[in-house]
Length: 63
Image (cartoon, rainbow, N blue to C red; front, side):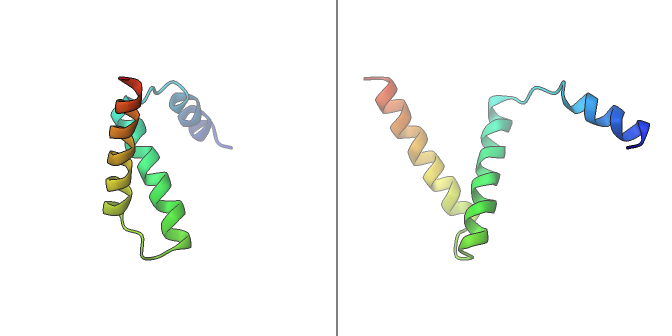
């Protein structure tokens, strides 16, 4: 690897994602993997399910 690439890789190791960025990354990963298997899956469908799961998680946590 070049020195510039090594420096970039090291710099990215120090980046801390916000919870919102982590959620966006999680949804993107879910969409990419499910859409690969089923082209009928949309980002909107992934978002809807993620929102439903978040509500369920909150309800369980608050019990």
